[in-house]
Image (cartoon, rainbow, N blue to C red; front, side, top):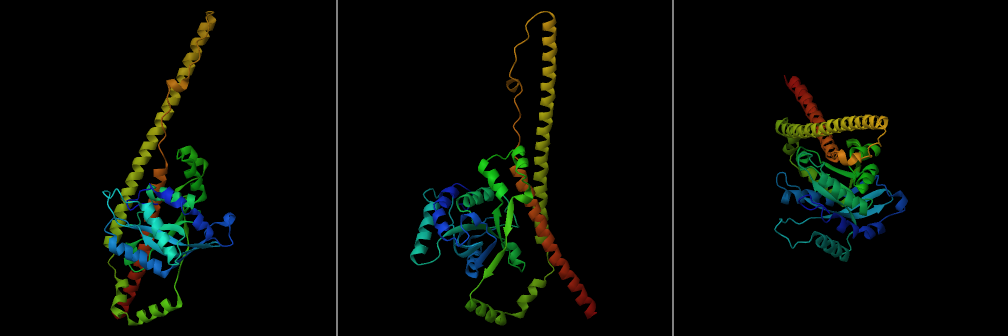
Length: 352
């Protein structure tokens, strides 16, 4: 599973050890109909994720944890979770896999859902489309087919609306990751683009009737002044930071394009040199044949002209996917602010 530093060292080991447990939670869907079309999350799980970030999240540091629940037909029900403990790289004796197994064993003893169904991670201004997340989710999804990753955005949540999304790797990307071939030819053959990497699964938050009654009571007791914070027009810091991150990713994409263009030019130049060498070789053999001499022996062109190593295109796809995420966030954020501005203008005109 993904460690707190977005590592992937223990992902396959821990996920594979819980595959059998997750399979027992399946409903009528069976192995042939295992696609998750909806994620149902208990309100308590959402509160635990938010509390985990408030207690341990600092700045750009992400917090991560394990999701527990079961699969009912095409619906993944997340009923519990627990965080990865905070530790440093100096804690060499700490075993995350052993810790997670002990936690699930303890939950099973108190009759709480303990089946492993995925993991969650916080994000900083929507910066979650990384190679570490892809590798971690592949390890989960390869071992537990129905697993998802929940992405919690605390900064967007602080703006007034809960930002919690569930993602899975697409079947096309799963096949490419299994082959571990991220060359341009393999990605083109698999028809992989940044739009076909992750698929978002709809989320439904479910609460019991008692919790709904409690929330209704709390809403009546809440101060009216707190609701006015949602009408704040101050958005320059959030929008400016997102635009700065977007420009950084565009610069990275530009550098990656330069590397790929250099590879294409070198490959084309090498092909021309190979063609010229073959022509000179053919003319020399024709001259030797006219003089009655035997032709020159054939040589292995792959040794004379070593092919250039093509650059891996997966990083480019991840950067493009992150750019797309930033653009979507900016679109949503500006749409909300435009609505506030039009409303503020209408109120001002009405008062005047």
